[in-house]
Length: 537
Image 1 (spheres, rainbow, N blue to C red):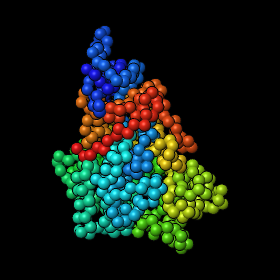
Image 2: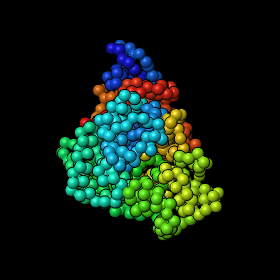
Image 3: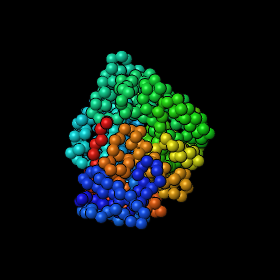
Image 4: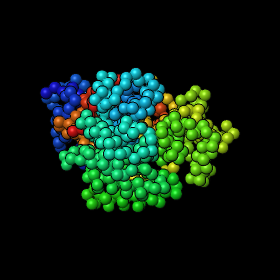
């Protein structure tokens, strides 16, 4: 028998959570055709097999390709399909369309709102539906597998816009139709970003009615949420997502679960108890988390929610009005009492050249340089950057992080877009999770801090997410499965990316195979684009 690729003598973690075994793996085209385990003193049973390429994996871990459960590569993959930042971590499949923002549907206000993103990334193609988007993505070719949720923000903005308005019966029907079309095109569920416009204007009833429109006992449909609060109202937010799962009778998933703000760190016990009680009652609740204590999102999330009403132009108009700006300032200072807060917020990206010096700097430092108060500095940045400024917020607790990572139903999600080490996506100072999440999890938290066994950890980033999100034939090493495989040195794997130098490759990963084709070979990128668009099963 001839195979395209033979992986010899590796320590195979098959993704199930079972103990590893020494084995040979044969790959033909995009599938695994055999897994031959070592048998006593007879050695590996590879006689009779010939291969085009052979990898000697003795002493190395061989695992299914890692599945990033929380990605934001919907547009960056069109700008640069190489996805080097993810491939170099061993990620072979991404779940995209998170936090209420997906590639489609894009109609009316939703379409206009994305125009700046597309122009900034140099993307010339335009589309409205997932079918159109998938055709463009397939034509360009991608380095990893692409799975997507449907963004609630896309649906709401396409029907209602960015107004603070409750949908009437007619609006809701249109929204349900858009969700069904996205589901039929292959999207696996609905995601919400309930701190961002327009998701922030929705209520629980709206979300239940939307999710119920897809209800089907055979469906793999899942609802994921960047909840309304990850801090002061964390418990209420968790109760809401559980109620959606119960009422709509669907799987629900908490995105990047956390206890944000020192005053909320003590809530972790109650948060976990709520989830586990719900699971005990048959409600399918899972979560994901990145292995860092700092988060990253838009800088304008510091503003009161009412400032977003009507979209970006209205938000900017309010910021430019001295009277309204004073009202915003007072509300911010009523909520933020600690001066140290401004030390914990750093600017990660801006679009203007004159403010590039701010990237990587804390707002406290920038405000001193500008001789302004932190709040007035915030206003100035947002106005000058036309709201297009990103930030990193250091607000979490290391012990809580470890506890979340250890939950048996928690997975790893980088909460980042696929970027590369050169080209149009090498901009700003993005969160190091973009380049280090998976090696950091396996190296720092599993090997060095012994949070769990390596076989348990591999299960959390392979088979568990595949099962949770309904991805068939991946996340496992067995005959007939898709050949997404990572080969790494468990003694050496670790992240190198930092907040000041995020564009650094991790170490210890030597081979990454996507659908049978090597994306990384002997530690070097091959430039292959063997990734597939994976649609709802």
